[in-house]
Image: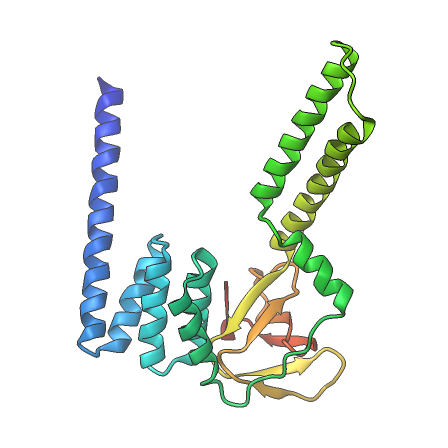
Length: 245
């Protein structure tokens, strides 16, 4: 009886929280349509802080920040929306927001083999690489069993193909996991100064610029954080001036 009561209360609280979130979302939409963009953006942000996570939420948030002329926050919100579900309208508005960046940084491509390597392990998520690894290992074991126990004949290359896929997928799974755990992307949400690692001179970085976080402890207590710019320069920037994706 207690378990049934507990489950009922849990389901009821979940439904009430979801209903409350839907009400806040509609209120934010109403504020946006009434051109009260700052208030709409704050309400969308509050929803995200409360744990609501959807591409529509971040897309609407990006629109509100864009209308409020907060380019950095708009770029961040559009990127968050695209990470969940990359829709054409989110991508178009993201590119439109990027055009509003004053004095944008140059984009320098990584060396070709680094680009190739990154595109390879980013081809699938950690979970997908894990599934590929598991399935290929199961197929290998099945073929091994049929060959050794059942005395079935199979070309050797079939068995070793599955073994190779298992090893490769297993390795790429850990590479992808390591990259996600140790390297973060972020967006500059307010104009700030950047101090290159190899120079004492500083320069202004415009809001909306996208950077990579290199610091091993980005949530630490230090005010500065090590980042890499789109032009591949590394240096220090104020932690409060960026927002992690």
